[in-house]
Length: 382
Image (cartoon, rainbow, N blue to C red; front, side, top):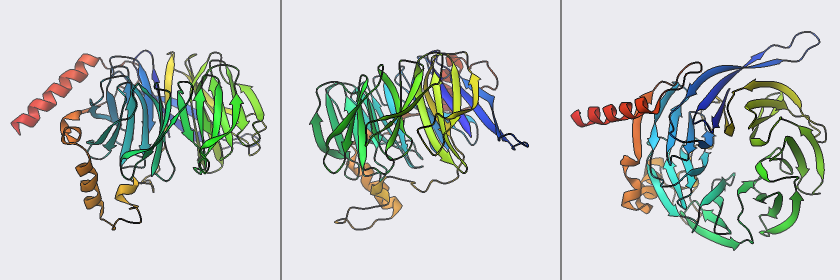
């Protein structure tokens, strides 16, 4: 298990979490140990995502960097976007979806690292996106005051809803039956079957992160030290607790045997892990914490779970009823045929296999660029 966090200081931090056996009368111990720091970006980090093999980071420098967590090396960079990369979401082990301030949503092959599809999604910035658990739909919000539904099977827009303000977060529930849209300090709860607002949650200050803890319980954090758990059905605040000394910037939740874990990252430099009780009305208990000494902006958790069952988007596994079944190769070819020629160029991926730095000395960006140049020269000779 690895915690990864991006910062304003352009550095990506990695911490391996060691779990010790429970001693008599005491619970199991969790200890985060510094694994690496890496200074690949030339501007602050804005997004991070992880699947079973890779961690990817997005930045205000308009690039996406790829890290192979099995080999602990930098795998290369994606340079398709022409604006701050605002959101990154993996679907299984085969696809990555990115959104940016250039208004584009891009679908990437997470094996070959080719851009399969590039969609002009919003007239303004893409501020956030979320993939339905089935992999067939995605939602995005942008600065054009719209909430857009995307048919990922066909790679096209399915529905556009005009909303009164610019939303900055959208998130599906784990079962995909509801989703939430965040505007400033308010969370509108929508049901998929009606596509209408069933209720609104109100937080104390502007919301910076949300994560579903169950199909009905939502954790909400914002420009304050407190994290709140809300019931999306009754719209009641179940509990709140002080998580940090400064505003909470990002949260991730996951389940492993015997533990339901919430991870929080803050501007105060701390990453904290909390274990949740079955009754979400009770505040969680602190498992462990670590201080990066940096102003954190985004957070991810890499779990070494082997091959993910949700290995690819539906065009490669679940054809629509009116489509014949295809093999994985045929489906991949079909997706690439849908993409326009410039979007499928390999030149969007800058190769490289650079070892992240152990300890606390970031790798200068200049060395990274030199490594990329030498990689290109080597390819030409071949």
